[in-house]
Length: 127
Image (tube, rainbow, N blue to C red; front, top):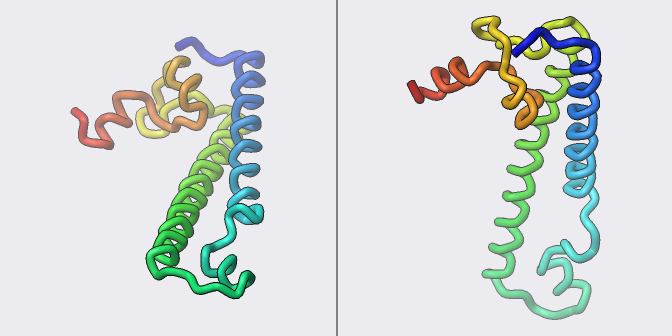
């Protein structure tokens, strides 16, 4: 990949900001669920009816899933913020391990990528 010019950096900055806003919107959804996501126990208590323990288990599983997804999104948000910082300091598009240029196709797919394909594969034990 060639050295990034100002136009490239603006493009990737906008892409990162767009993805950042999508994540923030997702996190807002987790924080402020609508009434459709009320627990079975809450709905049963409001209606004055009994609820089944399996339904409570399902509610618990859904809460755990939301927590996991929120944690995952939080990590992606941190990675995007780090990438935006690399744009500011002129190191965006360079592998944080070996310093090589990260392929543009990789950055298009994962604009917050910190490593080139070889270093990422090595980190994950693929080589």
